[in-house]
Image (tube, helix red, strand yellow):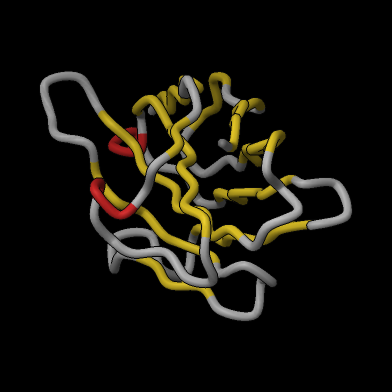
Length: 124
């Protein structure tokens, strides 16, 4: 089992930045990959990006590529989502998710463990 807790959400003006954190606990001695997703009101949960077990490989959806960066500090069992040049359409609840193993995927079903989510609101 892996437990995840997101933090760092809040309100920001368009063009601003936020860094979300995803703190993991539980079976963190085993390799695990992490994905970031978001869900806006009335929309389906959307994949944003993923990072592999040691941080050596990342992948992003085209809509955030170049603006969002995922990194991890395994000594702290924490994964980060740095979000720059935020737009009002980035407003959503942001979730991190984990799966035990070396690499994650791009689908909701690739992950077994989910955080509770953190709200990000971008105003114009």
